[in-house]
Length: 345
Length: 174
Image: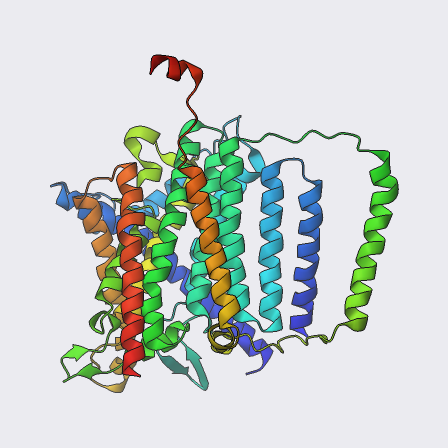
């Protein structure tokens, strides 16, 4: 492939991926308001468009036209940079997430992701670990006690749970022997007796899956781990002093992170785009993407369901859970997986 | 070609970040410049072909260690540093001395060390290439390093969990 074509294809894929991701972010917000509404016996958004489907558009317009207030006491360079850092790192990780097989577009054979790198999983971990700075700097540069406490809580929590998160992934890595997300998914192809698929969750990684799920909820600062933005004590946590589009950036970053985490869970534990294929050739081309989308949707729904169900942890419970329960569990899972694989080979 | 351009650009960014780290007055700006230096070094490793080292550089240094730096600065709420004029000796002897020393070190490294120049993308730094080195060829140094880190962690726990010395007022009450 020559360089001009390569750049053209990359730019087109990037635009499509960003468009899909941002639309997904907007409609995850809609879904959350709707589902939590129904859980609490309310209707949720229902005025703008059918079923309130145009509510995200209205929200976006509102965010853009609101007055962008900068409090006088902030440290301005970092105050402005922090939401951008959050959003940029939240959107970047979509670059290495594959959503399907290689496809033919005319003469061009291209994978359904922006780029396939052989350290894909490490790259995502690296990008997520940089995302902490957005939250931490927002808390510090706002120069307000609520923001600072929120920022501190968020970064302490993210640093603590990142260890369990990383360790829970090692079991999958041992089983598939690669950091490339595409190869990890391909290692999960096939099924036993045409009934139970060969997904990592059914290959002994069920503990790893649950550790990943818990740690991922904490990493994305979601209920029941949403202490950084605990409304009852911290107003809104690290983004207390932000308004209009700057606040929207944090909001988008949070939901983009949720989607990335859901994609990763699908790819690592639930066989990515693997699923039953049937029908004519064109349907077989599209089905993998549909399976992938459905699995990701289930995770996002689970996120919302948990938010509608569980109360918030206390801070010492949060740290105890992370260090005294999740961390040893992740280590045990790693050791057992390693032993099993070593004895088998 | 594009690799060379990127290599030079990120080299320039890392040098600029290092200079900025010294020039900034506020500790948080210095910490952020250090993050920029570490991240652009990771890109340099990536361009040389050491993918695994690049990813680990970002995860460990830029992602974990520097978070603790920023964390500490935030907690201490360190203000701007005060500038003194500096001693004249430092300016007269320090800067030329540092220049001469760095030129000497660079010259010795280029002239006498066995390590040749690495072409862009020439290193075999994939995880599969690094794993046998880490877990087979250099297993003992690797394990000794991890024991060393474990000792450091235990030391930190002991220091952190030590009972604070009771003040005289408390002793009077007790």
